[in-house]
Image (cartoon, rainbow, N blue to C red):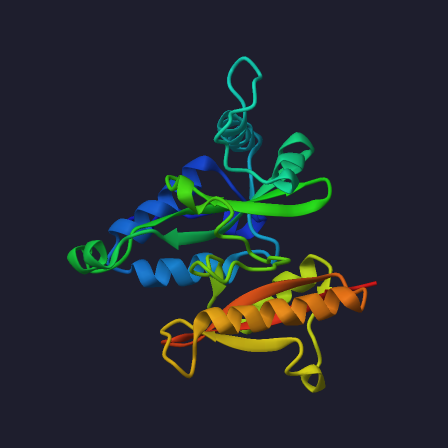
Length: 244
């Protein structure tokens, strides 16, 4: 009886392209896909997995192609903000931070589980800038691990939602932000309904979060926001202050 191929990147923190393909196949085709997903998350370094130089070159080329034509002209309909362009022009590295389920509810029901693809964080010389999900262009900038806000109150909130507060706090700390103390509530914490009603209107809750961020700005604080699942119909948020 042969043992399954070992993912050495789980030990080194650096995943090769072949190992990432193996993990993806196990998540999407293996009967024990939940165990494989747990293993991937449990072994992940705080800042995510590093990738090889070959993958980095291909990924950066793909993103820059969305920004400029082969002749160097800026595309009029490119999806990047100024901060994201700066990260591409002053690129440092990619980190594989998640396998994201991009299946619809119907697709998931047919398959019996989701369809997982890679989400990478793009890091420039000034730090993490944005994340993108392979094979789903619309998720560029919508899977940010942390976001400075403010958030659009006229549209659905599109951010990465963590499943574990401890992992979210550790991620924020790794990027230079500290978790607020319990007595700082409710100014630095709160929640947003994902299924709205008259008493719990998501847009009003997002507006309340924006108000907190504005008050942080008035106090001269540099902050960012992380989101974590708190229930079937709600998402909690934490406002993290930059450590000085």
